[in-house]
Length: 398
Image 1 (cartoon, rainbow, N blue to C red):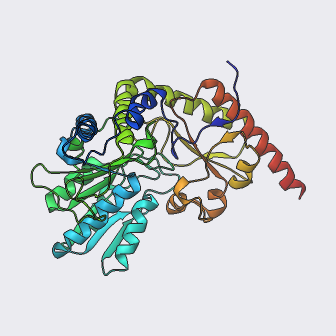
Image 2: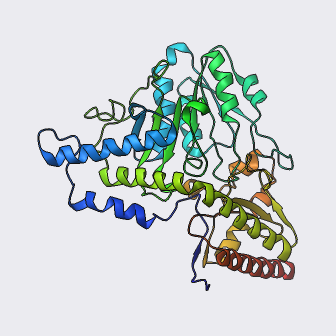
Image 3: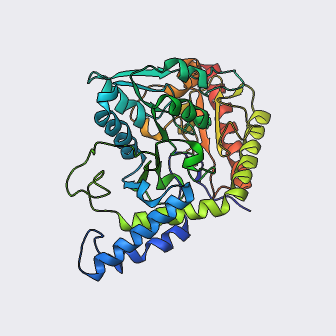
């Protein structure tokens, strides 16, 4: 099979929409185009029925009830609604919030804003670079951070840069004993690993369609209602949509596509994830076989319980990652989170693990996905090897 550049390996930033998802969405642009909030005519009724069918399907996929799924514009909004909404609603119970240093900026930035409003925020360190559990948070560190006035603990399920899978179930059990609400940013995990919110034990969980071969601009927030509902303060007002938590006209085509995308992930996960793990291992073996000075960032590759199947984050000694990317325009990879591309600072995730700034700046993140092939992996090995060799030669000459 021949490879037609450019090759896309940035599936943690976003994924290509699956053609089967596009097919499911199309009728809701021009045939069933009513506003689901419109009452009294079939156009609104049909759109509302499609939304509620999608809500039920997504809820079932995650072990939730349909009343526990709130639609948003994406995981960033879901994170903001969960964190700010809980903090503002529950402040009378305490103003201490706990999270992890390697969280996505969509969690860290809302926490920072709350920290400027008299809330106290504790960020827990992860296991350092070089450790067998590099990048993972230890449950005992979370336990040590808890206080009597702790209101919320927010821990992502899978890290967007190094693929580390945190022990959220154990953290949730710990917090449940203390009556502390747990929020989980599961944006990178939903669709890539089996998730049952009841088994996970979380109270709030954020996720997004465009990370699982669905459309951009639509996401979800699980809000536990069973066993004592979690109460949130709405962040967007104006109509009382989504049980009063998120006003705004619903994105019907996007929601339909969201449900279909998650359905396909569930159906194909058992075959897709081992295939991606094999491609990732092939990529790492190819890079380390062709180049010296290549090091792995994050948990080991041989334990699927610790790392996402399609994630590979590596550093190339004596090469700047940004320069490396500029030298291989026909290969789409990333030097960190797509949501922090406007910030020239080195990856806060790698720095939090104790990786030096020099090595952090020499790092690339590969995100393998559904549409990647073995031939594309071999192409990537060749392109990266050529570019690293060329840049190292220029550096030594300088």
